[in-house]
Structure formats: C-alpha cells, structure tokens
Amino acid sequence: MPVHRSGITRLHVYLAVAAALLALLSLPRTAVATGPSPAAPPRGSAHMGMGVVAHDGRGGVPTARAAQTEGVDVSSHQGDVAWATLWNSGVRWAYAKATEGTYYTNPYHSQQYGGSYASGMVRGAYHFATPDTASGAAQADYFVGRGGGWSADGMTLPGALDIEWNPYGDACYGKSPSAMVDWIGDFLDRYRALTGRNAVIYTATSWWRQCTGDYAGFASANPLWIARYASTVGELPAGWDTYTMWQYTSTGPTVGDHDRFNGTVDRLRTLARG
Image (cartoon, rainbow, N blue to C red; front, side):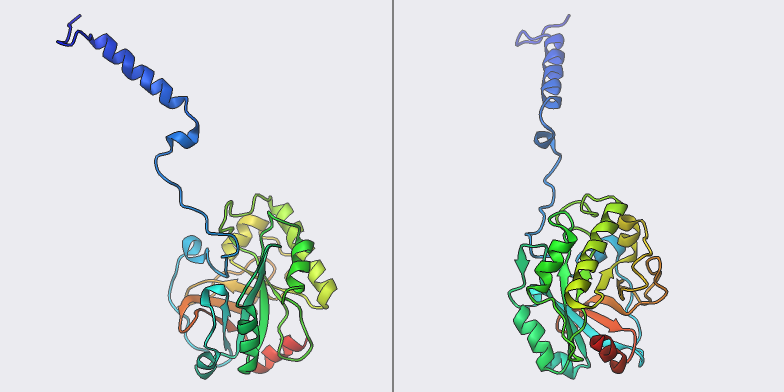
C-alpha cells in the first residue's frame, strides 16, 4: 500500500472519512439541516388571506359590476384606517379583525370597527381561527366578548369566522377533516347561541377541500365569503352554489384587501338586519 509523505496510508484516509460520515448521520436531525427553515410569524399577526397567494397564486382583477358592492377587510397591519378616503372611493362595507384564538385582540379594532361605522359603512368583525389552540366554543366566546357580537341596527353584519391555512404550522392545524368539521361546527353553534345569527364563513376552496374533505353541511345556513385573487371567483366549496362576499385582491387601494358583496347596498343592509 502506498504511503504518503506524512506517513498516512489511503486506508487511514478512507477510515477517517467513514468515521466522519457515521458521526454526522448519528446527530439529531436539527443538527444536520441543510439550511434554516423560515420562522413562523408571531402569534396574533394572522389576517384574512395571508396564505392565499402562497397556495392559490394571484391572477387578474374582476371588472366592476353594478350589482355588487365594494368592501374592505382590515386588521392591525393597516393601523388607523383612512375611512373617509375609502368611503369617497365607493367602499360601503368593512370587516375588522377583532380576535385570534383565545390570546389576541386587535389593538386597532375600536378605530377600525367604529371608524367604518362613523363614515357610514355597514361594518362587521372577524375572528382568525386557530383550531389547534382552543375549542371552537371557547374561541366563539372570546370573539363575542371582545368585539365580535351583533346588533340589530341595520349597520352591523354578522361575525365572520376566518378559517384558512395555518400561518404558524400545519395547514390544517393538525386536525383530520372530520375533526376540523367538528371544530367549525362547535364555533358556529356557539356563535349562534350567543348572538342569534349565523356567522359568515371566510375560506378558500382549496383549503376547504384539503382540510374539511369538502364538507357541504354548513352551506344551508352560513353565508360564504370566498378568497380568490383572480378575475373570476372560480369553483366554490361543496354545498354553496353562490357566494355572499368575495375577497378578490390583497393589493387594492388604501388598505390592500378589497372585497365584493354579491348584491346591492340594500341587500347588504338586509343581511345586516338579520
């Protein structure tokens, strides 16, 4: 066997390399990761549609339709909103994030929820669901107690359940389709018991298919708010043959998220009255 000037044979080199490989393979997986994984956003920072572009992409913008009514949705990301600017641009309704899980309330909710109302808009509140942190009923209680209620004033829309991709981990929050359906039903039942109204369901068709198994059982009672950033609304989740609201872009004027109510302002106020 040839000997190098240092006195080390090829066999020694081979054995050293093999030992190093074995040591590397024996390390915990976290120690041999090929690169850093993207950090999850801080709890409380979730908002409507934050997973839409990543999972469903972005297409065109729909053309204006006289029979539809422009709206927006906001959260703490928008801070204090210029409601007069939005009103003057034709926006007539708004939803503001109130809560997330049982651990977060939007610090701008008063300005957003009250400010939209003061400008003349029909307004509502939404809850970002985290089914892996607490039961549906517990989260409905938290939501209603912190700005998510309803009043029969003709200017307050029923609360909305934002149920979509988990920004903090597994897309379906670690739940099977049947367990997810049970969780959503638990929230909706509790919200109705507390307010007398059926909550609006905000979701995306692809998430609904993946995480509920395309369950159709809520369509008869709960209005659908569909998320799709494209020129057409596309396929709807099972059970719904039409949508009530459509979040069609996250890059609209003033606040980013813009929506269409599928009807006139009069129909919007009818929904608010209950």
